Structure formats: C-alpha cells, structure tokens
Image 1 (cartoon, rainbow, N blue to C red):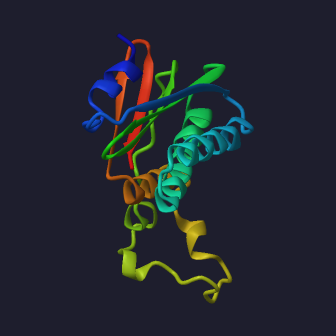
Image 2: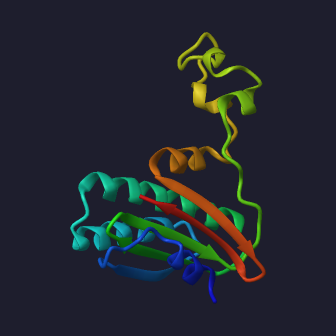
Length: 163
C-alpha cells in the first residue's frame, strides 16, 4: 500500500463528504508555484473557505519547497484529501533525505527569543538573517496546520498536514 493511501486512511473522518485531487510536479523550483496553484484551484472548486485555501497554499508551498531541496527524485507527488472536517495535504517523494526539524530563534542564534536583535539594529542587519535557513518553513506549517507529520519508508517520504 502506498504512503499516500495509508495517509488517506488516517485522514479525518469524512462524514460522507469526500474528494481527492492528485498530481505530480517536477523537482524543480517551478514545481512549487504549480503545486500552490493546483491546491488553490481544487479547494475553490470544493467551496472551501478562503482562509483555509490560503493556509493550504502556504503549507503546500513549504512542503514542496522542502521536497525540492531535500530529495534527488525527479518528481514529487502531491495529493489533497477532502473530508467533512477539512483537507489533508500530502507531499511524497522517493528520496529519503532528512527533513529539517523546525528551528527556533533560540536554537539558531543561541539567544532567547526576546533577545534576538531587532530589524534595523545598530549593525543594520535584518533580524531574520540570524535564523537558520532550514526549518523555518516547518514553523509556518506547524502554525497553520491543525496537525502535521512525516513518515519515512523504503519507498520514500510522506509529509502531510491537515487544515
């Protein structure tokens, strides 16, 4: 059974309202806006609220960007699974590269969050410049998704998020 099929079985209860949309994007930077556009298009067709569509678009952008950066496979599979409770976003690739853990300002600078330098400080650096690049997108996913997770198998890696 595929990783996406397993994720579909574990998606929120459908309550009789189901829908699915599945597609492949190339593992190229151009695959990111393609995935985002397809998510927006499918969710608008389902009549999902604008806030949920925007959250899902941001989430798929981050997940596909991670897949583009952290795998060597040629294609990335995306899938939306609609239920009465929301939508599950699935991004799967054949590579098994490590997905970065969410970084926090304290993790990347060694300073507590309150002590991170302010934008436009005395040295003129933007405060985000001091944050680690890997993992920031997963902070966004965590903030926007009701829940999310990842599953690695011999066939590849699946990252999913519910909105």
